[in-house]
Image 1 (tube, rainbow, N blue to C red):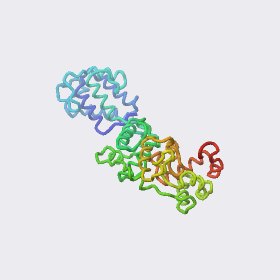
Image 2: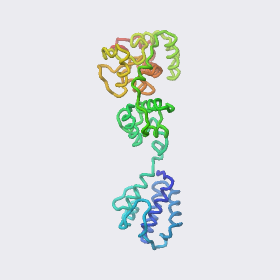
Image 3: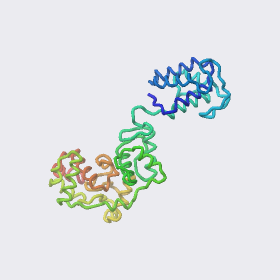
Image 4: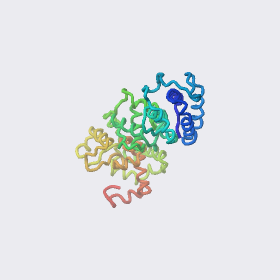
Length: 343
C-alpha cells in the first residue's frame, strides 16, 4: 500500500492538469482506478479527482480543452513532453514503472519518492529498530561504520551488531541509549557534529570484580535479573570458579594469545576497539569476564560486540552462554577443560 506525503497528490494533480487534454480523460480515470484498487488508496483517488475537478489554475481538464504551453512548476518539464507516455503507463496499470517520456518519469519519481512501506519498518520519519530491513538500514549501517561505530556488514538487516552500534553511538552523543534509531538519532548521525568513538574510554571502564567478592555477587545478581536467570547463580561456586579460571574477574580482559598486549592493561582498550571493528589480530578473539569469542559476544551480549568492556553486558553474556551450552554454572564447571580448552 502506498503512503502519500502531504502535497504529493497536489503536485501530481498540477502536472496532470497541464499535460493532459480531452483525449486523455479515459487514461486519467484508469489512473484513479489504479490508485483506488491496485494500491489500496481510495482516499488518494478521491482527492486526486477533486483536485483535478477544482482546477484552480483555469484549465478545464475534464471538459476537453487544455493549455499545455504554461510553465510547469513541479519538475521543469519541457514543452515537448509526450502525453502518450503517461497514457501508456496508465494503461499498463502501474504508475511506478514508466516506460518512456518525461511526464511518466516525473509521475513515477513522485510516486517513489513520496511512498514508503506501510508495514512500519522504514517509514519516513519513523523509528528503525531491530528486525527492520531495507535501504534505510543499510544507509544507517554505512554511516555508523564511517564514523567508527562498527555495525558489521552493510547488509540492510538490523540485527544485534547494528543495534549495539546504535546504542554506542547514542551513549557517546548524549542521546538515550535504547539501541533504536529514532528520528533524533538519525538526525545526529547525519550531522557534521556527530561525535566519533573515544578509544581511551574503553580502558577507563575496565574494572575487576574479584570472584566471591560482594561486588562480583551484586554485579551478577543484577545481570541475572536482566537476563531472566536465577540470581543464585551469582553466588554459585561453579560461576566463581569459572570467573577465576577465565579472567580472574577482569572486565574486558583480552585472551592470552594477544601476548604482551594481554598482559598490559594500558593496551586493552586498543585490543577491544579492534575487535569491536571486526579486526582479529591474535589466534583467539576471546575477551572479558567469561572469555567469550567474538561470535559469542555478538550472540549473547545485549549489544553484541559493542558490549565488550561493559561489566553488565559481559556478565549477562557469560550467563546466557552458560545457560545455552551447559544449563547451569555448576554443570559448566564440572565439564571444564574436558571438551576443549576452557568451557
